[in-house]
Image (cartoon, rainbow, N blue to C red; front, top):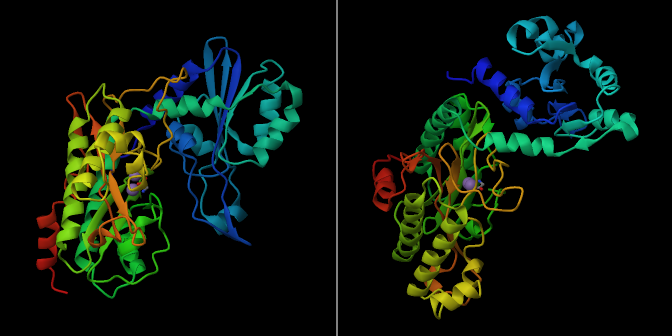
Length: 431
Ligand code: GLY
Ligand code: MN
Ligand code: MN
């Protein structure tokens, strides 16, 4: 299994160290375990920014950057060995092993974090901080009182670094994509009228887990028929009907890297002619927009072009009436394509990397960025302005695209999306 090397984590820490102002501290903390109810917790998920800098999965850890002049030391804080804790929760790395494993300048027990910050702040009065949660760390800041020059823009510095994926990161996305592909194809074969949406959701979870994916990268959406017109439908509790489509937006998280794929398939195995018309339009737009991806292009251009093509298509099909330019100007198409054309993806499914510079200028796509392309049309059942045959159809098609020097690579190109390919998958299916 490919992972990120300690050398790569070290170089990320060095790069962050260079970005910090001279004579400053920067604190990046692990995520806190989150209570689900009473004394049960959600499965633990590390803070992406912390993970990006060290690949450590344990809670109760932190990185402290101490920059004096131009020199930056990195101190890693980890949980001390504790037999009772480990009896219940499993082994922790501990200070001694962490010293050997991680290329940092110093390793300390997490219990020393507060006193260490207090000590360093006697000399240095600028503290950058980044933590996914409040509680202990905010207590640290409060204690520092007026000494703290807390700069939340530490997160932004790390988000900026996360914008360009390294070959090792891309390899992890590729590996995750193999699992997501397997799951989508499996679900296409298992899809059947009379099943509940959650049964298909369970097929995804089964394939993800069976193949060693950490979890889903976001809650799986399985939206039959008109449910697809609720963009983030996650109830997944309705029955699937033969005459409907089902929109499935699902991707695993593999070694902390997300995949984010939507396919819309016919429950009964074949598309009706009205469904085909909408599907063909969305698929055409998706392919055209993907083909536009290359270094230098603006995401807003992709958005604009997708909106125009979808608007033209809707006029052609009688969903919208009037001149395309006027409809676009009045934003009439947004009613049926209300979301963005795509987003960055990486350690988070919606990777929070910057879309604009500090001065508000849009950042063009560059080699190494990964983004989704996901046009959709959502035609609600109760919208009487739409021709009857299209009502209740909701379609999104979503792929994950790597920007390359030459243009792009569709990382999810193996996941079927052509009408005929999807239909023939059912024909090959025994149940
Ligand atoms: N799965 C969430 C999204 O497509 O943005
Ligand atoms: Mn997406
Ligand atoms: Mn999605």
